[in-house]
Image 1: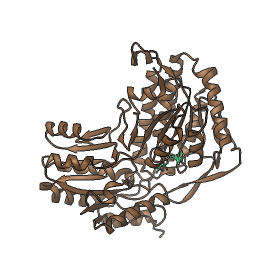
Image 2: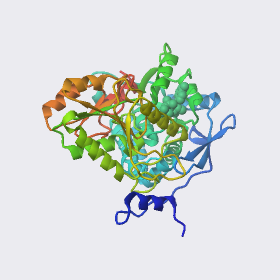
Image 3: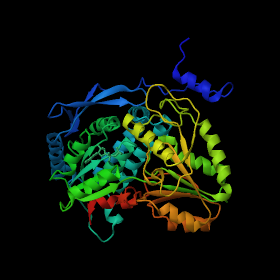
Image 4: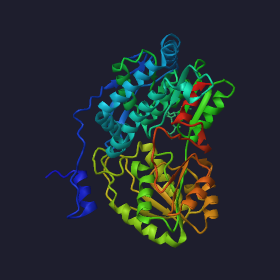
Length: 492
Ligand code: ADP
C-alpha cells in the first residue's frame, strides 16, 4: 500500500480513534499559465530584458509558474501607462462611475473566491481555511468598502476639496498577497489615483489572477499595473521620478531604506512595517478562551502576520495553568498540507524564511530559553516548522526583541499592570497588542497604555475594512483601512 506522508501524519498525530481523514481542497478548477509577463496597460507583456524567475509551492517545493523579472524599463513602461490613464481617463471620470468599477472587481473576487483561495495557499503555503475564510473574503470586503467612498469623498472631509495625487507605487509582502493588494489598490482607485504595484517575489500569483479580473471588469487600460520581481524592481518603483506616492508593507529594514531614498522627493509615503505584539493575560481572564486567542494570534497562519501576538505575558498566578493548556493545545495542532481543510499550520513561505525561524530558535536556546515544541510529525518535503514555545526568556533576549515571523511564541510572566505595560512597550515596534481580562477597567488601562496602532481585547487578529490599521515607532507610519485609509491618497 502506498501510504502518503499525509496519512502517516494523521495516524501519528492522533493515534487510533482520533484521526481526521485527509480533506484536501481540489485543484482541478485552477487554471495557471506556465509563464506570466507583467500586467501593463491592460495587457500581459514580456519583460523588457526577457528574464524570468520561478515561483514555487513551499509545501511541495514544486514549480508553479515562471514569473517576469521587472527591470527599470518595465517599471517605466508601467508608470507611463498609469500616468496616461490618470491624465486621460481615471481622474476625469465621474466618481460614481469609478465606484462602479471597484464594486465590479469586488463581486468578481467573490465569484472566483475558491480559485483565489486555492492559489493563495499553493503559492504562499497558508492553510486553505485561512485563505478561504480570511484573505479572500476580506479582500473583496475592502473593494466593496472603498467602492462606497468613491463618490462620497466630499462627505468624508466636509468643507474641504479632496483631490487625487496621481500615480501610486505600491510594494507588498508575501504574508497576505491578495489582501495586501486589496488594501492598497482599493483606496487608491476610490480616490482617483492610478496604480503600479509589485507583489512579493515568492507570492505573485494571486496578483496576476487579479489582473485577469481587472481585464474582465473592463477597467480602463493602465489604471492598475502589476510589475513582478524582487527588491531591485521594488527600488525602481520607489525611485521612479513620475510616481507621486509610495505605499509599502514589509520589513522595517527595507522601510527605512525607502524612507531615506525618497527623502526630499515630495512623494507621499505610508509604511506598514514589522511588529512584536504583546498578548497579555491577567489572572481573571477566561483562560480557555485566552489560550485559543493566543493560538490564533501566533500559530495559525504560521506566525506570518506582522501583527502576530508573538510575546505572551501571563500574570504569575495563572502562568503554570496557561503553559499547561498551551502545551496541550499545541499537541492537537495539525501541521501540514496547506490545501487540507483540517490543517492549522501550513508551510513556511520559503526556505529562506524557514532558515531564519530555525536560526531564531537556536538563538533562543543559546540565550538560555526552555523550549516546548509540538511532537507532531511534519511532511518530509516542503518547508514546515513545529509550533514552538520559548520560556525563561528576558526583555533583553533577542527572541523577545526581534521579529521572528514564524510560529514561535516567547512567554514571560508579570505581577502588576505597571510592570507588564513597561515590558509590553519595551520594543522598537508598536503595531498591535492584545489584553485578556474579565475587567473592563483593566482593558481601558492597558489599551490606553500600550503604544500600538491596533489593540484587541479578549480576542486577537480580527480585521475589518472600516477599521484603520497601522503602527507607531518602527512599525511604520500612516494608516490603511477605514476613513483614515483614504487620506494617504489625497490632497485635501
Ligand atoms: P519580508 O521580510 O516581508 O520579505 P521585505 O521588506 O524584504 O520583507 O519585502 C517586502 C517587499 O519589499 C517585497 O515585495 C520585496 O520584493 C520588496 N523589497 C525588498 N527590497 C526592496 C527595496 N530595496 N526597495 C523596494 N522594495 C523592496
